Length: 384
Ligand SMILES: Cc1cc2nc3c(=O)[nH]c(=O)nc-3n(C[C@H](O)[C@H](O)[C@H](O)COP(=O)(O)OP(=O)(O)OC[C@H]3O[C@@H](n4cnc5c(N)ncnc54)[C@H](O)[C@@H]3O)c2cc1C
Image (cartoon, rainbow, N blue to C red):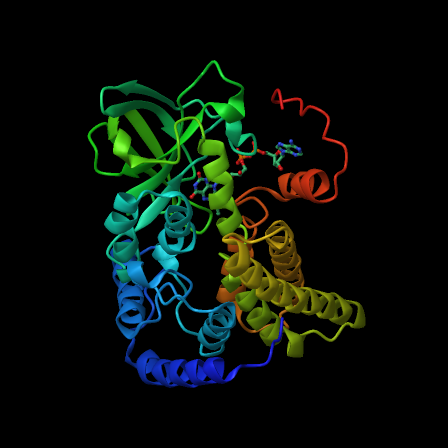
């Protein structure tokens, strides 16, 4: 791809830069991490401003409120919002970055009409109800049951680690619809309205004292069949569409935040070995930014990010983990003056090699699906 701006991209860049310069100073102060009503208000307000200015869902089709932007314009959007330190998607993460794109790829027209414009306007916060206490890495082993009864699925089971579960209006839900079929072939992907009777959401407090995640208990919840995305028992294929977006470009902010932290840390690192470590991390984050550009181009060409998505997730989470560890060593010597922020970032980034598929699982996927290596031996805890 040509990384220089075309005439159209240059105009888009100039307009966006001007809009950001005018709009960012008007924003209120960012809310505290654990003030959820304020976080929802702040993040959805930002989303609405983007929408009204024509910058929400730049890659989404125009008919659903997006911009139908070219890959080049999508990259300009990422670069300019990053450069200006604009707010990131926040609570709109699931909706804008993977639920919406999954509906665009797999949803019915009625589902697209019902949700896509609202997601883009910041009117609908989504969450993801995939993991279960005994089905995380081995997600296809999930046991939440859905039994067809007339025009409804009756769903019973338990989900865990559901980010934004306590504020989400809709959830991406995976259920088992055929318990007799091989495990990957009996799963269905449903849209879960979070206010249905029989749903109980219990927040889990994290290391940082905030309640990012929830357990979600489902007791004979009647989910209308029209909320199904894709065919019954074809949910594993749809899930992989969701993952390709979630692991593809959704976490761009992690690279950008990492580069910022590295820049702030650099003047305090005097030890030659640590300077080399820092330089390695910065070079990796730079390379991952280039890979992001490639993923965006491939996603635009084929509808979903290519193999680079698998590399990106593994790459940024490991690079951020090493950067966090290095920042704590420097902080420990009292040489670094962004104490609270660096410590919070360190605690938060500990979760990155686990979220959205652990590093071990990403390595298995890369080994087996990209490199064609022999399949892993059965893991002792499951029948994989
Ligand atoms: C910040 C964060 C946000 C999250 N948000 C959501 C969300 O919104 N919705 C949701 O549904 N889930 C969410 N999750 C859950 C996440 O997807 C799971 O934690 C993850 O898939 C791992 O599953 P587990 O926790 O059950 O660990 P386990 O699967 O029990 O794994 C434990 C350890 O065993 C290793 N392991 C397991 N199987 C293998 C194998 N075959 N080969 C090699 N090693 C293996 C793992 O790598 C890991 O180190 C989130 C997690 C985090 C940390």
